Image (cartoon, rainbow, N blue to C red; front, side, top):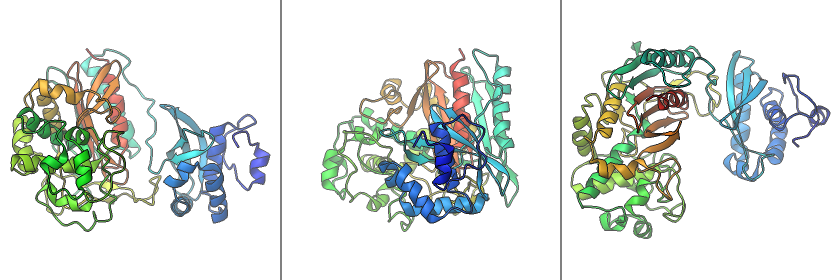
Length: 486
């Protein structure tokens, strides 16, 4: 199929609409883009979409996109867009991004394609959420003055905000603690008209998994746990006793436990409020594991909920109490906490997300505060960019955990999640190491990134109230620039 001619493609019933002038035969990506986007034409039929799904989606891709979901999303795209014109593609980290123009609203969007790793002629996935415009503006190519860094960061944020791809705040500290950049863009809450500011409270998403990891290692350092301690020794009543015998504390910290994502569990939506992490376990703990603990790794919110329950069982305190005392108070995070979503909170940003049936973000963003009644030990707390940079500074200075205890947490662990230590992302960047944690996701109204250049101490926090991956893409550029600084 990658060498299909235009004539053959047209005979198969596909319209090439606004393809740029291309040599014959079409390249694999251009052809695949043409076929896929023809399904979003208002004239496209269910039979045409099924034909593509059967021929061009890989076996793994068909599992990821059942035909009912595929048909629903492509049909919705056709209605929302009035058709998508293909303006070309570019590679970002080796992944094709299609540059598109939606005819009805007249806006440009980007869609990511993921080819199947076992059969690159077929499609595994396509961008089910809006992708930000790749940035080609001024940046930093080496060591720079602080004023040059500040100007580059400001330009990057303005580029995203001008395209309605960022609403939030950002802060960057130099190794000596000086504020190199602090700024905010967009609206924190539409009804009140409150604008985003450096002291606005944003939902952290998964970023506060690092708090849970710190509290776990604090108990390890005190001799009350070890990384090899089986879960069954701490939570004797865990609903799946066989799983609890196989899972140890190290597995939970490194996402190698076999536990899942939590928010797609049938019982999650019906779960009431909780005061302790053990209250959440009935949603998932009785179920089977996705894989044998320690045999591989997959990102797991459930694993960090279990760690919260472990912390409470061993310490006798609630997870909330320990984080408030040992992290927020020690780091001077005066505006941070796990506040109920349903209650008013001064200075809180409302999340604004695209609906799940609006994969390219062609409709209006809708308000959404978070999943469940409030955050827990897997994420969902609130903080500010000022508090998060204070946290990261205190972390590296050893004020939150003994440096010897922290050291293995901020290194890639064998058998654990890629580019992850224990509760911290560990990302090689420009010959240095980024340590921190991002948070948020598609259709969540949450997106942020918080990190350190570990070797030098450059530190940043960028928090937003739009869906991922917009703030995360900005952070990718910022941390690459900071990694170049002495």
